[in-house]
Amino acid sequence: MKRLLAFAFVPYMAFVAAGTEKATITLQPSGEAPVIAKEIYGQFTEHLGSCIYGGIWVGEDSPIPNTNGYRNDVLGAIRDLKVPVMRWPGGCFADEYHWQDGIGPKEDRPRMVNSNWGGTVEDNSFGTHEFMNLCEMLGVEPYISGNVGSGSVEELAKWVEYMTAEDGPQARRRKENGREKPWKLKYLGIGNETWGCGGNMTPEYYSDIYRRYATYSRNYGDNKLYKIGSGADAYNTNWTDVCMKKAGSMMDGISLHYYCVDNWSSKGSAREFDNDDHYWLMGKAFDIDTLVSSHSEIMDKYDPEKRVGLLVDEWGTWWDVEPGTNPGHLYQQNTLRDALVAAISLNVFNNHADRVRMANIAQFANVLQAMLLTRGDSMVLTPTYYVFKSYIPHQDARLIPLKVDTRTLSVRKGRTVPLVTASASEKDGITTISMVNISLDEPVEVTVNLDGAPVKGKKVEGNIITSDDIHDYNDFGMDEKVTMRPFRDARIKDGKLLLTLPAKSVVTLSL
Ligand code: AHR
Image 1 (cartoon, rainbow, N blue to C red):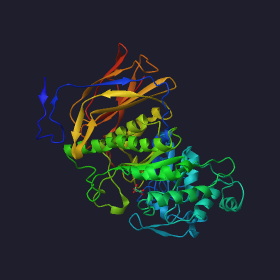
Image 2: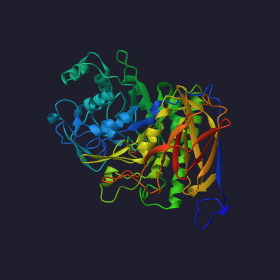
Image 3: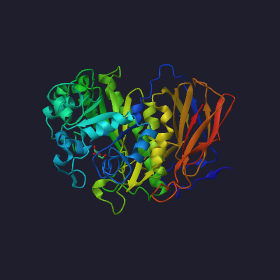
């Protein structure tokens, strides 16, 4: 039976006749398709609020169970998520960070004011050794964001030498500070948001500066740096164009930052929103698809071979802070709605794996769209954490291109967004498909045409992330509301995978 959705209740949607929603997903042969870089599942950690202090690091003397100062519960979460790469120390903080203040005996480390983030006094107790050792212990690739805004070429050059040289003056200092062998460092960011908090530069000026900093960031021994230019803010394609033209030949990657915000002076609440806000957010999240395409197109002009990666090294939702918390600490809750944003975005990044080689959601703990929240010795895993967990099979798997036939919705700000988005990949003989249904009330009957799937299989299993209410979130002192549960309602029939995708859900299935 058809039901008409009343325009008055859903002003964000085109006037549509709704019945049983249907969508078809067709997997295409994956022949030449790229591998989905595991780094797309990367994290961002900044000296901001309690991302580092309290979120990851509590110090060796803390009553909170820890290993060498790192919280044990958080170490477990990093392992469980198979975090491939972590960006540090910022963000805006990186361009005021002077690494030499964060080495040597802790009691001698100078303090500084974290002027970007609430004026908090930073005691530098978490520095290069603490970050690099954390990454090494967990098998995570470190991604160092170098200070270009207020630091010198010499300072960055010496930092690279300190971390990666076997011998020489900086290696000697490192050894005196207790670390004999150099660490491995691949990812080096040359500045952050140099169009804004990282120096308010023009793209022309930054491109020249980039060339200088990149020149003196040397490869020591067999350590080979992957140098990343500070790329555009969201829709600023001119930035990408100028940087690629003037400095692209010296870059391995260029970044892109995209936050789901349209009005920076009133970003809205993480937990209190109406249906119109929900659908606006889905449209805003899906806009990353257009954005990645337009930046990639510009990069193609200068780099048709796609040697240079596009790294979305900051992305996610950014809400007004939770009432009563420090406005400079960017602490926000995380509902099922945020989880849908994560899944939509990860599907887009997977599908653009030919150009997108890394993405780092902002931020790992207690800040913006976090994986986890901590309070004292308690830790809460957010709905977004579970999306990252359910998408693990896509890490380093070969993309299976796909086509989704689904209804599109017209939402606020003149955007359109498909009701269902998806991505698929194959690894070790297992085909994995992730699907999102953004509808708040309509389940969607999905038919996945498996003709192009490298592995057809007869058995399907998977998981679902959903909850009764889109506003649901996980909080301290209560059972988890939004989590990952087994999904058993899919079957294979006549070479097709059939399932009903519940409203507001993320489902990942493996064949
Ligand atoms: O993630 C918070 C901030 O957002 C980062 O420090 C900065 O790079 C961006 O503006």
